[in-house]
Length: 222
Image 1 (cartoon, rainbow, N blue to C red):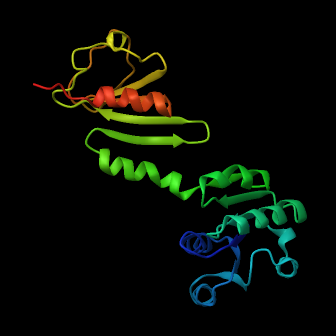
Image 2: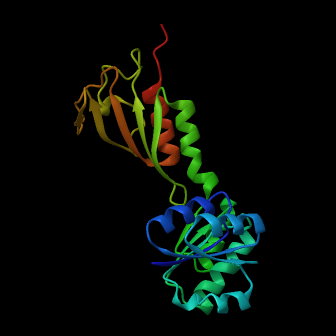
């Protein structure tokens, strides 16, 4: 693929290295001189020093021949302009954009981004997993649709031990998708009895799943 990358910072630079190693034809726009020099010396990519919204530069780099574009600068206004130019002026078929602020997600999509990724949102589950790793692990989270998938470890003295799904309050809005017990996945019935060390997979809206996960991870006070 011919891929154009605007912004060779903390996200763009590793992607340039990876994509060039995989044989893609990479064209980069970057305004920092040191980063441009690094790319020239270490990656198989065509590098253009300047701003991502320099229309004259876009003509010189044959943007109309690109298969995909990634707008990865740390400035959302620049990424917005890049998306508009790529989609409206050059018809680049596939655009991925970085949203530095969550509120920019919808704006970037409106500007032509096919996929918008907000690093602060995407990394949040990793930090939550780190602090909650003894009981709750976030497997997947989609903020736009408020969807969440988690795995909860029932502790040795968990308050749900000995209970069945139909006996646990307020689970109507949450799906108990599966239970990992002794290395085997079980698809639960309403009569299945929860045991200590069960790993319960829950899915549903973020708010409902978080409440249910707290219930499953709660310990009985003795």
